[in-house]
Length: 469
Image (cartoon, rainbow, N blue to C red; front, side):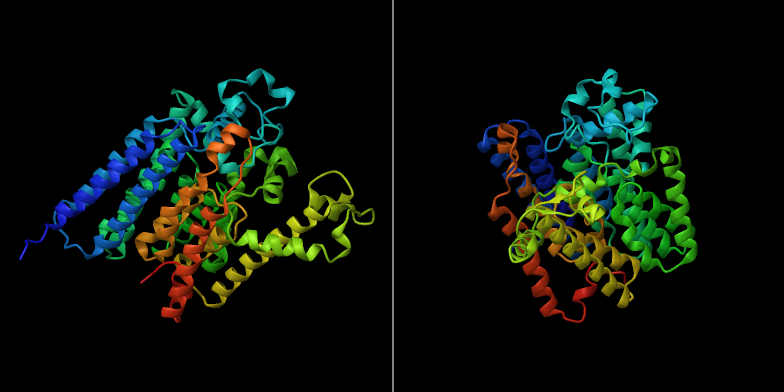
């Protein structure tokens, strides 16, 4: 009978596989006008995710041994080193971060002027050349803008300064997860859900997205709530909201006036430096909400249904809403009274998924889910219904995998790099076109998993956002 492999050796082997495959993913970036090179790169990315998923699924069944937590933390840090050193590869969002910080350091307001504005012409530099949608002002909320300003003030190259800030929140969240698992008397090795995730390493350490900051503050709010620190929980949730607005959807589940007061106070505090912008503080959020689409799943079906429905109404042709100019501007985002059928269909589809999202939240509140479970439900509903599913959005769900979120989200974290499949064509032609098959694989598998899970465990299915017990 063959001897069993010691659990530490097995865990170390899985860690080595995740390391090697993630490093190969980072090393295979940047040759993407050649579609074959991009597909090769995504193969490494998917393989790295598969190794991480295997480690996450089996780690709790391995006998615990001394030194394994140190192994988890050590692999987590090593995983990020090549990514910290590499240039952003999949997204140019970071250059907007650097630009906004530079504008503020020069005394400007990123809400007042788009990067292309003549008023900012004297600030144009290398980062400016990489900014997408330079005709639009910033979309980012005030806490994000404050951090951009802090990064611009550091005595480091701009990209290194911003990566340092992201890394502090990234590794801080890893430490927080270990403490949270200890408080819950759970297996501390489950912190590898975050620490060993190739998606986290590449989207935060390499691409330097700010989502790691928002999710660290969100998890901090949940931990503070569980420790009966209501004011701290509200303040952290407010700061998370001021990084990405999604976090505010958790507030109703907290059901506490002190928490709500702390959230509002935190929002006002970080927004104070930008209140002079007035209504412009919303930036280009409306433009993003009306028009962006990428890697969507359920929204594509809703949009198709809305388009078909519009053809059977008076909006099947161009309409002039002279009696309702505000409605026309709400639908189009443009200073005109004419509304076209595709704009009506798009507005109806986005309104529909927004209502569905609110209904899911209402059902979660009716079921009186805990804040942790509410986080899983809210984040999951957003990922499945959003018109835009960028791969880095999924990092918001990953910490909850350490406390029992459905393994359907493990599958999404592994497969969502397929959302980069059109990147090579986009770099070559400027046209982004998501193939149907990648979205069917990503979204279809997750929906199928959740439906099967609901039938197998009907009483618990709705609660599997995360396990609070």
